[in-house]
Length: 130
Image 1 (cartoon, one colour):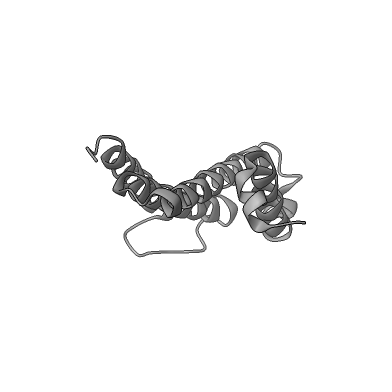
Image 2 (cartoon, helix red, strand yellow):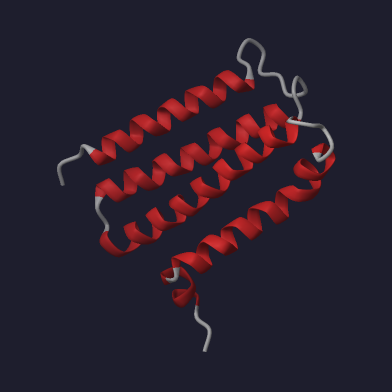
């Protein structure tokens, strides 16, 4: 009998489902319009890969936090969630450059700030004494 718990415990099937879901949801609006744009598609695929890895690690961190309830795992889950946001912002900037304007702050700078924030939160979780 199929249970969601079996899916979460099997990391390889969880990874496959995360990749299929992300690529399936981003294929039509993001990937396919740029498929023949030379090396630009590699830049987009780099950020899609970053989102896939961040979502997978974020799901693993949330599952681990739900079992153990430590602040280290909570900080790790928050850090990966921030990294998902950072990769999403940079993917939007790479896919549709110049369309979204935040006045004096570019999306690329916002992506960098979110990446640094996620690294700081992850470091706080790693170096935390629980």
